[in-house]
Image 1 (spheres, rainbow, N blue to C red):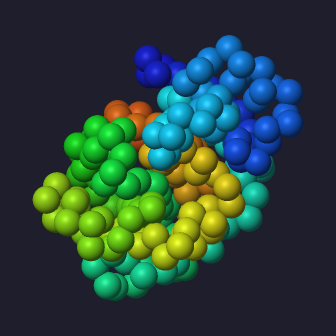
Image 2: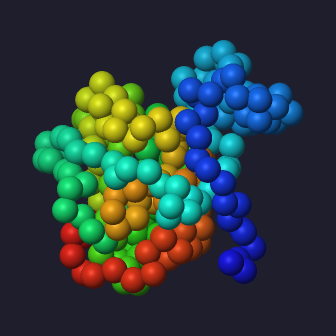
Length: 208
C-alpha cells in the first residue's frame, strides 16, 4: 500500500479486556491518549476516545462472522444477515465530540463507496443514549444510512469487544468478519481505502 497513511497490520485485540497484557500496558504507560490509559484514568469524561489506531486483519485471522441485528433508532429493523457485499459499522453517540467531528467524513466515504462499491452497506451503532436523541442528530446532520439503537448495549456486545472506544469504525468482509478497525474518528480517505483493500469488488446487492 502506498498511501501516506500506511496501515499497520496486526491482530485486533479487545483492549478493555486485556489490562494484564504486557504489550498493551506498556503502550498505555507511555501514551496518555491510548485506549488502555484512558480506560484507567478515571477522568469522568464519560467515554474512551480512540487513540487513532488503524489496523487490518489478514483473512486467515478474522475469526467468525458477526451476528449483528436489532431495532434502529427510527423504529425499523436492521440485520447483517444476507448482506454479502461487505459492511462498514460505525459506533457513535451524539454526545461524543470525536463522533461529531467524523460525521462529514463518514458521509463522504458513504457517497464515494456507493459509486465505487455499490454492494457495501453502512450501519451505525448508537451508544448510551435514547433513540429520540440519536434520531435528532441523524436528521439534523442528514446521515444517509441507518443506525441501531442502544438497547442497553445489545449491539455493542455483538461486536465481540472490538469497539472499546467511541467512535470506532469496523470494516466487515463479505462473510461478515471484522477485517479492519479504526479507533477514534476516521477520515474519508482512510475509510474508503480500507474498504477497497478488504473488498476489491462487490455485487450491487444487500446495500444500505
